[in-house]
Image (cartoon, rainbow, N blue to C red; front, side, top):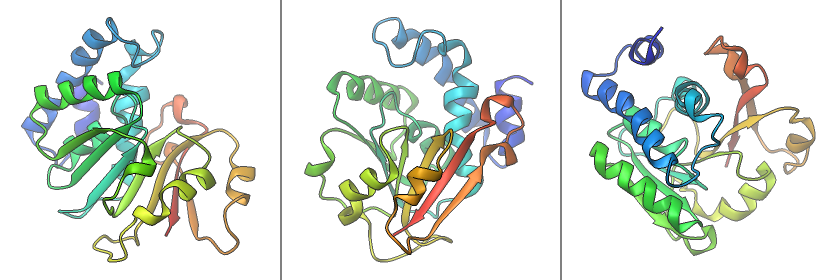
Length: 211
């Protein structure tokens, strides 16, 4: 199954414009990765499975409501924010990272694809003042640390099917990390293998923590 077929299979409702944007992502990252190490050299040939489809699994778990505001904390090369911004063009995404050269590359990719629902910032989380519906992150830090950094940034008003909070892409054994959450914290752990059969996702999860 090629890239277009795979993404169309996962999200049959997306448009040809979105499919073309997804198809353009691979060559863009391959070109930039020759100049700056956004993605490990061994992973670049698997960018659609290990980075784009991985990011999109959040979109299988929740369909963000129009006009939601999502923070991608520690976006790195733009994951999961860029794939999600293509999937949800009526949702606003703020992609933030403390490494300036990565943010410049992400902004160039955003400009090339014409993603007008994306804002990028070279910033530390402590300097952010915007309120968000959800904060997403992939392999940035332990959940309890992410919550400590960002709990003041989540809006009180809910417009989505799930209450506002954190949606984290995590891998491996997570029992100790989840036990470290505050007593009474509500969270859900969803296996990505429920959405995608590839063995790469065998121990990869979506973790939702309610604010």
